[in-house]
Image (cartoon, rainbow, N blue to C red; front, side, top):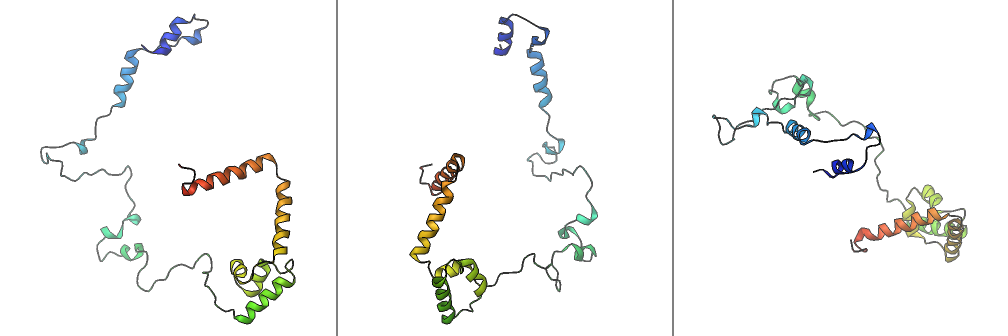
Length: 190
């Protein structure tokens, strides 16, 4: 017997809304309705008792003639040329972004100039400005010349001031992210 039914029989009835009874006949009827027989195309027939026949399950709507795969079209069908993605003589559509091509245009004098500008005024000549001037990446600028220890200490102080203004939520979120990131390599034993 269902525990919910037992519960309602034990408790005194206070209102008409608590009249909940579930009978076996209702459950059996619903279960029987959900057990649908297989489609006739899936059943084994006398023609192929082993089940090695083609099963045709047509779609609910008729397919469009424009979406016929070129594999099923005859060789001389005019639609075959239109549906092929890239035929001879056709070109691809233009790219959305201009392709990035690496440049190897800097010479030793450019490297010396980058180092001189960076050590001369690191507040003015940041990685981003040097990268824009010499048409290269910020990562490459960092490889050419490392920031001075004074600049690194100044940036660490700025970062500490910024982190000092963080609230408990942000600190907790950063710690949680750090903990999850540590688990990516299996460090947490999961």
